[in-house]
Image 1 (cartoon, rainbow, N blue to C red):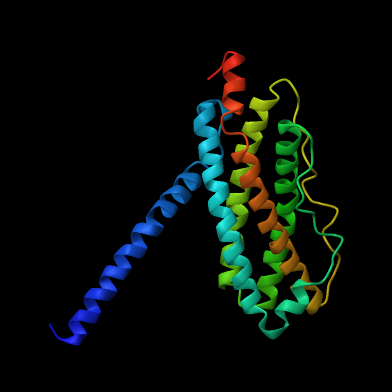
Image 2 (cartoon, rainbow, N blue to C red):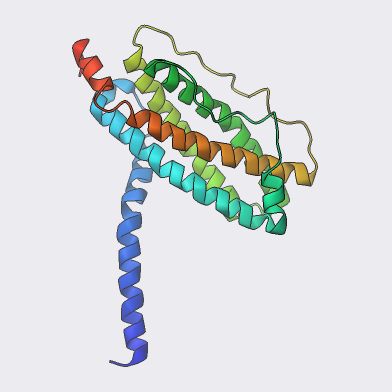
Length: 223
């Protein structure tokens, strides 16, 4: 077998291995897109928590990748703009003493970040070609963060079945006014950095519910 043929075989094997890794992710994303809205009553407690945690873990990884893509697109100024401080970006810190309070904090923060992510996406369309890896990544991330928020809402309904869930404002008051190009770049990096921190914490908060949440629901007479 000559070198060219061997190289083709190795390339094919690597492509197959990569496809086997990516396929489960594509399937999970496809399922989420087929069911853009969900009813909390359609899933068992354990199934809901498993799927929510799996999607959150996936988006946590993808948010880290998106942040690196964003930084790479900013050139040599990436470290400088990402170290800036901005008060109008939601915090990523989860608060609360009880399970319900902390999951509510996760839910509130997810909803708060959505309008900021949309603003960053629109800014990136103006700063760069309308179709680019950052814009495409943000579009996908917005969709899936919305889906995670829906699932976390369902988890809250299990944890506190008789308590209404407060909804954050549709458009956060923290959206910044007109910004120059440097400020827009810094704003985008800070939003993505804090989003990645939030999703990482959301994974840990949901992991802490394993073995607790569904037992609690069983005692209340549900699945």
